[in-house]
Figure 1 (cartoon, helix red, strand yellow):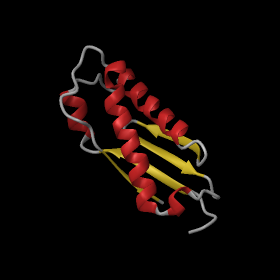
Figure 2: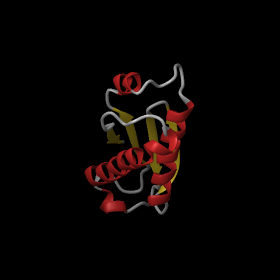
Figure 3: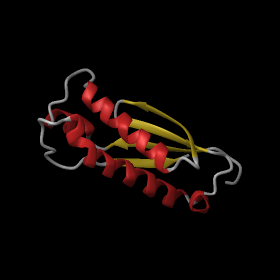
Figure 4: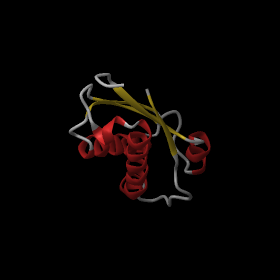
Length: 115
């Protein structure tokens, strides 16, 4: 719909298992939270013409696009796939920056939806 806010919400898939296997510190692992924040900042920078705000909690992040955005002609599936794939690949690339002593045992995955 034109002239409406678009919110893309990213959520970690099976992140409870992922965090256990990678031995995240409970209840909140600062390294994991800082990695998520770093990925969110990268998304903000990559889509700076269109995203006006981001908010994160745990393994979830929401990105709010301008009411006037014409990113991918406002096609939800294209917006979702571009943002979630960029976030996920950034997470993998930056893993060692935040977990220098830990191997990434398997790649994380995130799902996303737009509202």
